[in-house]
Length: 372
Image (cartoon, rainbow, N blue to C red; front, side):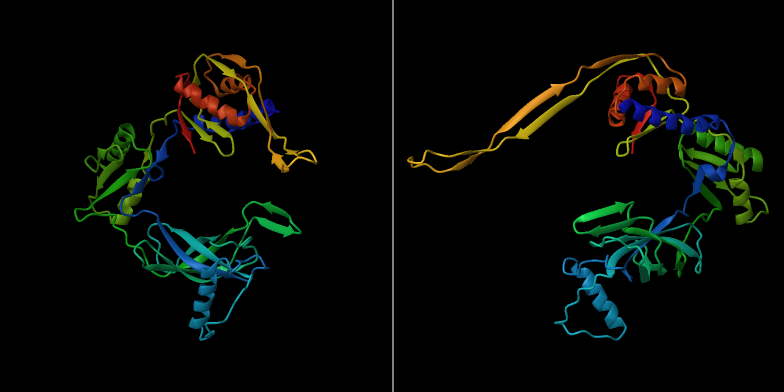
């Protein structure tokens, strides 16, 4: 079974990585390689209530802020409850609403929002988000969100049994928020210059981008000031928008990314780039299993003795280690060869992750290992 899992993982690995290897030398436009300084994406957040849930909302006796939010909402609508009023609705849930605002988003634009349960609600499916103001880190309100939720997961429970698929406590509202205030941007300086921030900083990439822009728009337009910044200066009769459009439309061939192995330790997934190389190595792999079994008994004295009956706790501990597998891994220069070599080990996916990291530490894997 372990060998089957390993084959499946690295079969997917080869299918994903070969297209990446084929596209390493392809020219790309500057807009895909950089972002504009002074015009980043922004995050906004707000606290809201989801109503209309089919009995899957918060238990307000355990989540007091939900009851307080309901009371505050009703008071804004002119409904005043006595202080002794006790509410226990299960069709309302406290949620946090988040959205990402692209640069240059103007008032009236729509945003997709993500809604996540804040209390102990079991599902947000079927709920409707009440109007919720979304604020930035400075406390200003930039958008208003509301609408019915789209939830991909579900949960059901009855008589102690339950079933759950995906995450029913997180939902989305496409175009569920409307911008009410623009977030300021500052792309151009007082001297008519702008900075391009490289998504993959390196001296080579910065130099290539600056050279390509100069070749297309004229000498002295672009200057690489650091591995992650290229400064461009506007000149001629072109306006700011037209000039930046030409800059971002310039084609450049970036340097090939360094070899990388991406490891997702939670799901046991390994993805390798097309230029990963494996040097000869020897791997020993074995399992150690420790079993602890409780064997409780009762110590009872003789009928005429003056003793007390007491419980005795015993435990049987056994340790078993399977025979280790010593596998010689030959040098491999293609993904198919690497997959075949690692499949020889016959380890489980979680163990393969540890083996890949050990190969990197031993210098046998020519790649950067990144755990996500």
